[in-house]
Length: 211
Image (cartoon, rainbow, N blue to C red; front, side, top):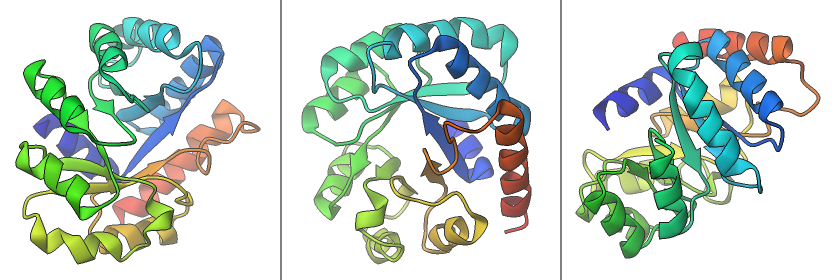
């Protein structure tokens, strides 16, 4: 976890996306990697997700050697097992449950669970997890993390859901206690070329590094 946590803190953003096409998925990962991104969440949101993810992991050792590629939107033990077998560097869930947490601990799978309430965060905290996704972030607001953070010393928070990919909005979350934010469709738009995506992310990372 410490390596992933460090990289996420350094990046301040974690791009997340899914595309049915493997080629589009590969080109998106390539564009993000060339922009300086080293942690990406591919999302389990379509019938090609597992196959695409498996192929991306197979090529990443050579083509994206420093990349930590995780899978998101994992909701049950079966999916967790499938992606663990596909060598996911980490697994992100939209929800948290005792079953998911216990399974991840038993199987030594790095889990970043989705939490909404303090009770959710406490379940992660009591099981030794030190990074959670706050989801959906836009429903909770930028002051939420700051409000609950003192209760969970050492816990790290990554809000995701409805966050705009602009430096002002992101830094508000960071000032509110987040270590990074998850960015989906606001960052990776379907009408972007890979060159435009690389340029946008490079500029965003450069601005955030000044924060």
